[in-house]
Image (cartoon, rainbow, N blue to C red; front, side):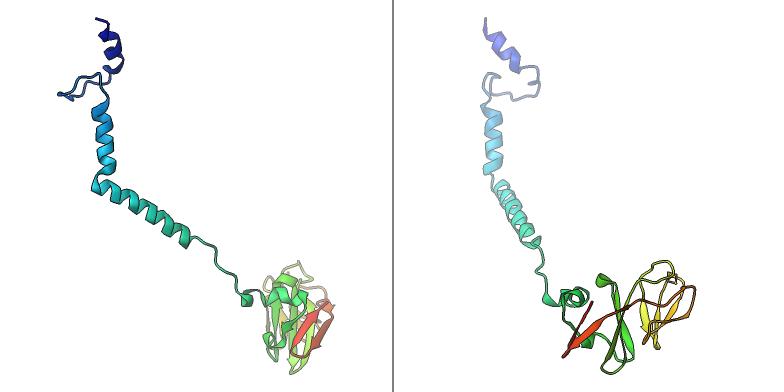
Length: 171
Ligand code: FES
């Protein structure tokens, strides 16, 4: 008679038919779950997930930085940018240090502040003996930094460049 109290707590959700076993024992459901886990396919699926996670972890490791990746702009301030990075008759912009270095003739190097005196854009390129600001097309002489054309009110500010062997530093 008092069994009802016990079975009534589990019966409201047990309208599904597990016909052979009485509702007093939870063993069929637990057994089903265990059989799913120990089922051959179930074990393979679990193993696949673990292997897949391991593979993802291996693939997501950060890339190893290369020495060459940091050798252009950042090295100019630290001391020792190869002179080969500046073409003869042209120049190179180093945005990290806001510097443009030119080599008007072989072995002659000039350095200027890469901030355009017009509205502060960064110098974009060196072409045909001129340093060019891409924002409003101010042009500057690649040897002296003087303004050649465009809206810039003045020339570029010169920096001190020191060449030692095959490397240079700018201050
Ligand atoms: Fe360089 Fe205007 S900011 S030309």
